[in-house]
Length: 613
Image 1: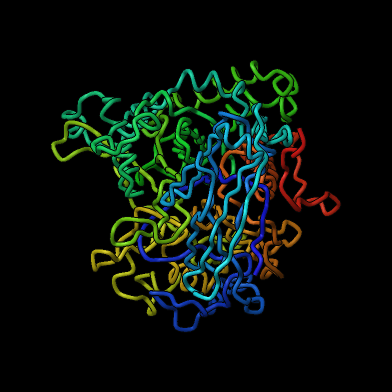
Image 2 (image 1 turned 180 degrees about the vertical axis):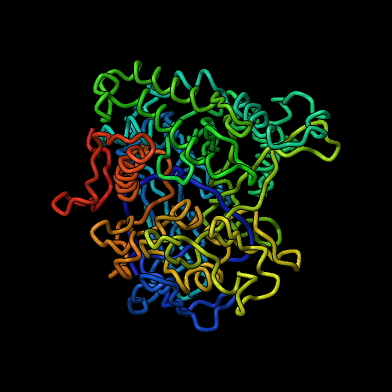
């Protein structure tokens, strides 16, 4: 079958977290028929029970089973490349059926090098390439779950004596660019200068301390930025099994990863769509040829189980006030002066960030809280290895989450990989019947007669999440890494048996009710705002699934393009911010919600940079 080619270099895309275990890739826009997966934990009936108004956890009707789909490859949208100019790009493929895919490079210019573990080509053309007038790369793609599927792809670009401008993502809406994904370097510069990466690591450790006991605090010394940075790298190296990330390894890539000054703040991302609104500060290892990101999640109040219900109200009101004061105009629309003046907007962004990071209320829990530090990188965590350590298959991408934990001797904190919430496995109406909430499906719920002993450790009842299952020790535990090639049986089985992946009700869960690996290769949009049942149980069950979109290619920063889902997600953010700001502050902002307007045009494809000079 033909591979689908689309102009999109794989940078990173994520707004969340993840975990570790089996084999596989996330589910597609049309997920398997309920009960059809080969899940490690099974639900005997595979169908949803009726749990109140709207039919409880019963899924909307499943579409017909889909024939096996070919993997997709994403050709970088280069116009060409010049002598001595260096570009790095991905060869990773995405397979919506979670098949095990191996991509290798069979031929390429002598001036290029390929790291199969990270699925990255780095190319600096020489005079020989200029004489040839082109650079050609031949890729072989094998579906290891279907051995007869062997495909080939050729990428070719002109080579010239002069450097060629690289594609840059065009500007999206004012709301996207100045409120929800603030990415213009001029708009981020002030915050980046005020909060360098190692300082944020130390601040995260400090913000985590109020939840510690007096005895523990008495032994702790001040946060050590150098030691914290080192522990962060060690955790990342463990996630990806890549010594290039390990400061103790002879293969350590010090030039790319060794200096915290080269981990730059690249995106400021306010999130007003959470139960607790939060701020996300996305840093990137900018000298690495691969996409490597770390995202600090912070909010105005502490993050620990003992905080009272009123903490949510205070958190959301404080966050909303700071957001409106610094980023919106008096009418609650994007401030036109800040839209027109990136430097002035940058100062406002810094004031907003500082307000969140330094908040101090009257209660002990009412002080800025550190939630977690998720990471996303294409450094080999999603690549299976042969016995000799060489590449076997996979796309290289993996996700993890670290937190600053107190060491065994009690004198210092270090960033440690933790188990991460997985996703919704079923949904039921809330007690007041006004919303859908997540609950653990029967195999994971210890109070359910269908519960599978041992698997209850994956159920986080307070969140309605089920973690990804790491059974590597012989005993099930929450996993500490996620990748597209992990947990195939779980992701295609019990994880979606009662709630298909593209069921719009998932959107109400934290992180869209799914794991990062699944979210970042999705080929469908957000919930259908025109179908009331996707939000209101009293309207019954959803009549369909989320609409199809081009596959999201691991995007976190719109570099050369805005992917279709990223654009629609920005619209979704605006809709939710409009609602939540009014709830928190009692006044309606002048924001739009095109997803709720039947007459508004729908996004159908990416917003790409022009391919002509």
